[in-house]
Image 1 (cartoon, rainbow, N blue to C red):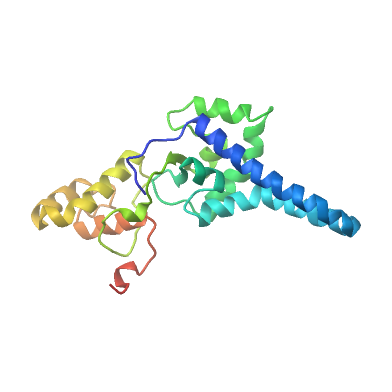
Image 2 (image 1 turned 90 degrees about the horizontal axis):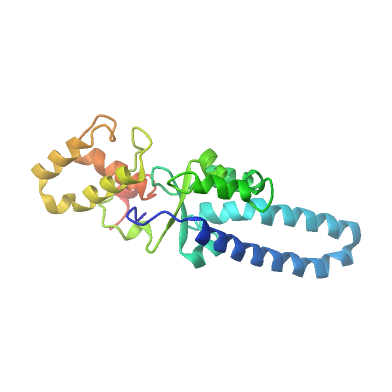
Length: 219
């Protein structure tokens, strides 16, 4: 993830939602022209597909497509966890299912009030899922961070803290072993009490979403 990018406010997020609404509506309209031919069975299929498109498919996109639905992709937005790590299936599903709460009392007024009430523009679903939405101009794996088995940080990180970890991990190979070890020691509280370069690299690999065993991948 590129943690230097700014958080996304209500306007680009609303436009992304509108784009996603349009493609979902188009898909449902297409099905509505065919499924009535199947009678009550077709109507049942329509309701199931409607539920999946409204609540499950957007979560799948966010979990499997780098934190972005098609609408977010067009708007250059991305969903991340609070510590800057890629969003997983659980948080993605939670934040999408809770859109019904953000919709209350009407037209997502609850979500808008929540976003305008905090610095990170979190809606209610983001609070529960522990996620944020950011502008994402380039993907996480463009960072030049040495491979290591990922390990979660000792505690939840702020975006600034996660950015500092990634910046240091990216620069460490050019700093030399003594300077790298000195700076890594300053991040001991984030690294679970181990202020060494190896621990730093493991946390950095976790933050960019690499899988276990990455340090053993062929070169």
